[in-house]
Length: 116
Length: 111
Image (cartoon, rainbow over all chains, first blue to last red; front, side):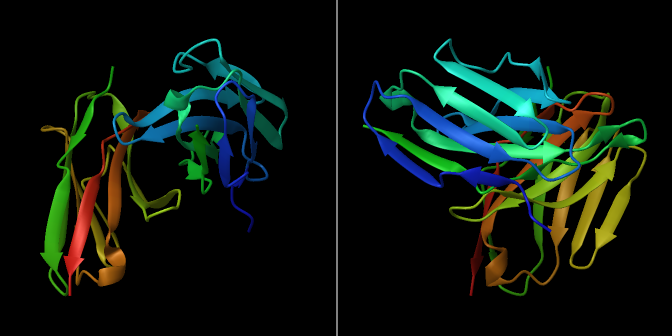
């Protein structure tokens, strides 16, 4: 079975550039999560969607960050303009949430982002 | 909000048992998880337990939950060098998908 697929795996760009991270959740999952992992702050939830609708974006650091989920099989996280402090590993995770209970989240392999 | 705490580092000898501990603060947490992260990879779900359970065993893994003390542990029997990784404890409420992760415990297995 295909897991959560993220692209690109690595991204190196100069500050001020726009960065777009992509995620394809597991087929059949209806919840999607974007996380950021750094040594200093650990794993932080940025935003999560349920049935393509953003439910909680309180973790989005500032207006430079935006996320979309145009359909059930695709999501993007965009940073514009990017800054060196945005350097981190960004993970996407997906799960199924239903009346019978919530399934655990499954993570992609992450995008390692370096802003120079 | 929920706070999940773990010790940062654990070192064990190959073949010994490892016990990684975790505490959480929200008594309404319904689901408790253990994830494993190897270098350069994402978090891999190892196992999870519902709050109405005291113990769950899965091959070499045993999860113990003390709901009164809000304490969760992961025991790895016969620890192997391939078990070297960072282990994350996490907790969530039943009706809400938001999961709070601990800082992770780095397990070092000495051959």
